[in-house]
Amino acid sequence: MDALDKQRIGTETSFLVNAGEIGQLILLYDWNKSSLGPIRLWPASLKTTLGIVLNSAFPMFVFWGPDKICFYNDAYRHSLGTSGKHPAIGKPAIEVWPEVWETTASLIDSVYATGTPSWFENRLIPIERNGQMEDVYWTFSHSPIFAESGSIEGVLVTSLETTPAVTAKKMIQESVQQRTNELNQANTSVMQANKYLQDIINSFKQPLQVLSPVYEKGEIVDFRFNLTNQAYASYANTTPKQISGCKVSDVFPGYLNTTSFSNVVATFLTGESNTWMIHYDQDGLDLYNEMTAIKMGEEVILHFADYTKLKYLEFELLNKITDLEKSNQNLEAFAHAASHDLKEPLRKIQMFANMLQDQLGEKLTEQNLMMFNRIISSAERMGKLTDDLLQYSQLSLVPPSKEPVDLNENVSQVLEDLEIRIRESNASFTFNDLPVIAGYKRQLYQMFLNLISNSLKYRDPSIPLHVEISSVPYLENGVQYHQIQVRDNGLGFQQEFADIIFQLFTRLQNTSTQSGSGIGLSTVKRVVDNHKGIIRADSKPGNGALFSVYLPY
Image (cartoon, rainbow, N blue to C red):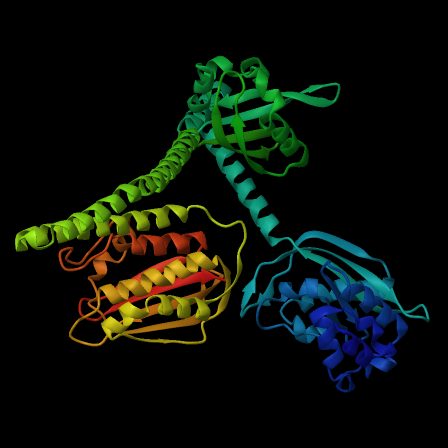
């Protein structure tokens, strides 16, 4: 409730400050139609009681006056169901609870008459809720509310619905009774009963045991095996019969220093079930288990879910991932070194081929010239490949921090650098309103350079090339992205190749007619990965290509 609400409420209704949903309902209710009259005329005892009730996290209900007008708090609200009785504020009790009023009226009237509080535990009071009658159990108390004159003007009800607990208890009692009847009917001995239980827990494939505490000076110092199954006994290379009655520490001394002891103690003392993960590396074992402890009477049932094999597979996978990362690093280092080592010989090949061609001049036949041109062209392609490899390997060195990058300026710079190719291709470009993002400026330049170069390279020669670059906000899996799309009307490709085109040295078009190293789109993918982004490709032969880059905000 904000300051304006508090000011509106005023001093006469200050008890409704911070009173939640029900407080608002009380404030908005037309009390002039009620026997209570407007709130300003309410007795202080009612306001004080409601101030306590409405600000309590415990379910409470108030009956007030001879009509037993109903009030309750937010904590009690869910007990009325999702439809039907709520809101019951301001209504006489008999209108709210007609189906049980004959039963409960006497309890309320007794408090009105005698002033003696009452308390009931797990009492069945069927109510109409959510359009049907439900058997509901309650633990509740009735307390008189005294007016300033000393007379009893209302009854305060503190209540807690205990249906789930009562139902669970009945189910347990019925289950126990059923088992007891079965054992009695079978007229078997205690030994036969134990054997029957042993057979049951032996049917569990996961380790299971039933333990009882061992006390020393009033404290639990150990547990004793009452029952175990073979899956558990196998940890000690023994049988359930051989360890029955033994202390756990006699079989597994190291367990006393682990949560497999301390958490079981906590479950026995508090009665609260507990589930936890444990790496048990005591007593010559190396196990990964999910353990669950449940108290039953004066015993604890302990169940294991052994995921040791899965954990070892996880370790193996992590090792393989580490090895793969090292292999990738080594490959990148090799590419970096190789590209440097290759560039100098390639320069010399080109230089000497040109010099030799100039020296021989007119002596060269047409076939000789073709061979020289092939040497020079091959050296140029090899040089381009080494440059692309060097550029790709350098992308593994991510700058220490990002900076604001205006993608409009970034694209403009790319188009300026590719001006000659664009003019020769008679290509046109459309882009505007691209965002300023936090990123690595040089890498984003390389991303656009390779995407636009890809469009120029694989254009349809029968029509003018047009490339459109756009950006819109995009939300995926709770993450906000800039969706940057580069769309062209080029040759396109089959959608089945949409993933492999980002792999290193992958080329889908005819290598004899289309130049390239197969590194450009791999470079784009590496830049997007460095920015924790996503890239997707969509295309159809003859319909151009669409590359969608998702860069996080």
